Length: 260
View 1 (spheres, rainbow, N blue to C red):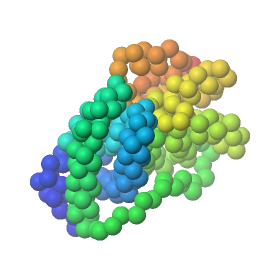
View 2 (spheres, helix red, strand yellow):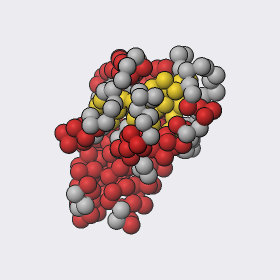
View 3 (cartoon, one colour):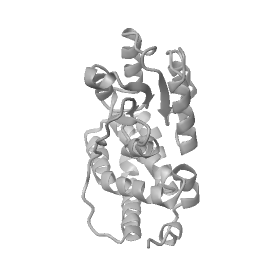
View 4 (cartoon, rainbow, N blue to C red):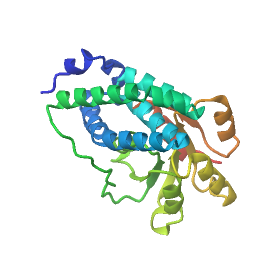
């Protein structure tokens, strides 16, 4: 049996995390996803820093920040948040000067989680779509594997949960007749690489798809300008991260039942 005190005594706010995950079984299973995907995310962060690509660097540290906060790793979350803000300001000097601090804390968290699970090396795994045949589906568009798997766990018994890692994948799915006929609602993130949420909304608006596919926003972007911009589209509602299971169920119900 895993000893949660290993996490708590090393600074993890597990109590806060359980407000999202509900129970330790869900926390543990989702923490495994975090452990498996973070090394690749850290490599991307390093790559973008080395080439001075602050736009994509900001996206990746935003994702790392959100994931860390979900699991109660608040120090890592705060460090990643500062890197997000500074990279958005194109402050490469700050990013360079404080990069080791970010990497060292991320490494500490990974080693802590490994100790908690009692394992050594961790192999990166990819999200796998569930093999479920249902007559209704929801589309979850988010670059975070944590969020996609969390929503999958909530709704897997009621819907086929179709996932997209970014806006381009979402648009491709909507244009795929084999999948789009089952989609009853869309939960869409705003801050994603390649094609972001606003570009998806622009596409939906141009093709008059927001009536056909009721869409709500799930996002960690909470600045007033972005929120006001999102509400200019014919969306149903906005749910800010971090959220809990009850929040997700409530917004999905509202989205599906929405009569735009």
